[in-house]
Amino acid sequence: MTVLVQRYLDEILAEHADNAEGVVADYIPELATVDPSSFGLSLEMTDGYVYESGDSAVEFSIQSISKPFTYALALDEVGQDAVDAKIGVEPSGEPFNEISVDDQTKKPKNAMINAGAIAAVSLVPGANPHERFSRLLDFYSVCAGRALDVDEDIYQSEKSAGSRNRAIAYMLQSFGVLDDDPDEVLDVYFRQCAIKVTSTDLACMASTLAGGGVNPRTGVRVASPAVVQRTLSVMMTCGMYDATGVWVTTVGMPAKSGVGGGIIAVLPSQLGIGVYSPPLGANGNSIRGVLACQSLSAQLGLHFLSVTRESRATIRATHDVADGVRIYELHGDLLFAGAEQALRIVEQDGDGVDVAILDLSRVDDINDVARRMLIGMREALNKVGKEGFLVDPDRRVIPADRANAAVYPTVEEAVAAARRP
Image 1 (cartoon, rainbow, N blue to C red):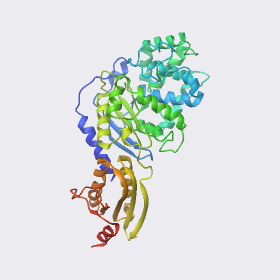
Image 2: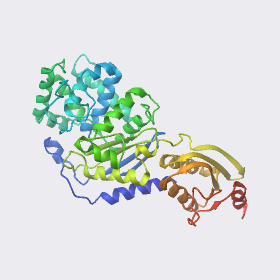
Image 3: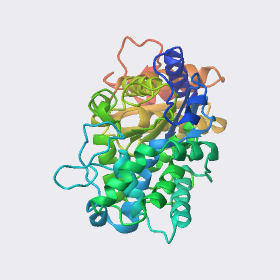
Image 4: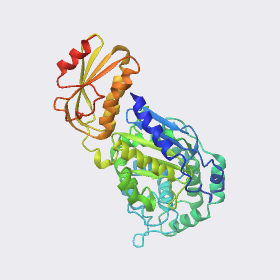
């Protein structure tokens, strides 16, 4: 049944692939050389299962998507009080590279703009720039579940075009925000932005945050729940620059964009999303990336205000009632992540199960995407010579007009149907 989710991703990618709006970033010369047609979309569940579509294996520079991870590392290493003394948490209302600080505190307004990100780099412990960057790179790699590396051409290009960031760093030093040499801090910052990732790497990093700081593939805890909560809070209010309000209302997930064309989005306790498409809009966000995330949120019901009640354990119990016939008891509120998990378990049980019966009697509520996925289960099973039935006593979950679903009022009737030749 993973084909049902894969179909959603492929259709969303195809829907926006021909959009030719926006331009690739060129203020860093090396970024201007990327292929503007590249478009990758990855989604990773918090149990580590990955869906990919398009150019999901193409590497690109992480750029500003690095900011929440450096912020998280600083919080974890030196503590919230030390970080708050140097960096605020309010939206800036200014471009990401504005040479400014808060009028009263003289601190960067948040860690998602360049001034705050440079300050966050300076808070990461290290005896020298090499040690500081190694700590950052190791942290990013643990979040991504693989060893990451730097694009040296991008790094050199960042460094040669970094006059504005130098102005920000020396301004921060003048206000007492930077205690270390600005040029040494900037060298780490330039390298950080040049780390190579794919959209699938971003999905894993996002899923690590969605899982409260535990990498879903390795099971390694990379940050505490408190650090993740603070990081996601700032991402929600500041991560998409001046387009954050539109993002929160249309997508509704903590997110961060980068001028390399990437976007990371996090749905806590459920999944992480990584997107790559280089052409940017006026606010420095990937145009196709934003559209893809808007479609994902709308079609899969991923807005954070829609998913707060979903049970983490969708399948309450399973038991076999005959040779090759298995009942799966579902419960709670069933949304995209829960339906995906349940149908993937049915698929993984495939060799030992000829007939899957999903008992929906204890499902309290369901959204449209989960309903469509359950209805699509039978078609997917039929294609591999198997059968799927649903038990919905009052047709509260599956409407009576959905004739393509085999729905029975009781488990006993579904089992009887399964036993019929």
